[in-house]
Image (cartoon, rainbow, N blue to C red; front, side, top):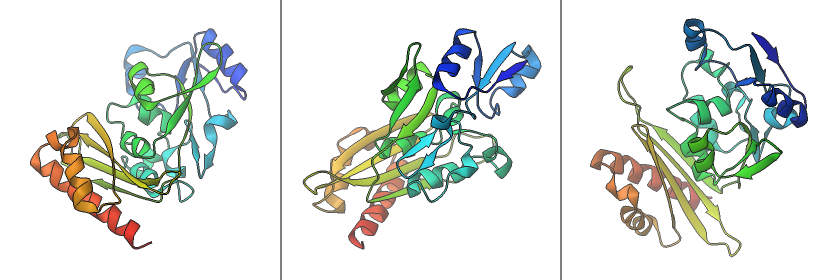
Length: 240
């Protein structure tokens, strides 16, 4: 297998045109390749500046999870820190987790940040939403988001080999008029539900509004965790 590491978007497009298979840490595909055979040509984005940045408002797709630190919002940092073992986090990448993994551990955090994705199209990079990225499995270059006032993340314990653990991500943003809006994303099984509501009227009002969305259709145990996480993040907001 020949591995190419382009240092510009144009070089990356040339690699794709030549049939290169994009890889990150290869944690999800290595066993399959060992069984079925390796591709002739692969491409890593780790030489591409756009894909390796870690900044307060953006994160590259080729960034390995253990590099995600206090420069990004708490919800995203904690989501990355909850993935696998330390060895996995030193090789797994943002793009691989969001696009290649069925668990998509970073997706709830990215959704509550109202993140937008830059992907590499056949002609040029372009910006799109996370729903399109996960549905069409685009080649992700980077994420960018609006910095929230506060955020939070909770991942429930789960037995190894069992169903994916429940994840609840929350963030509060301020609009141009100073009004606060709560965003909540829940991973239940392999599905992710994302909703938002105003929260200036208090915790109970916000929770009541969420109950009238798809969040309210979750099982009672999952809704209890949502209530606790929403209360925590709004208490943090009130204490600022």
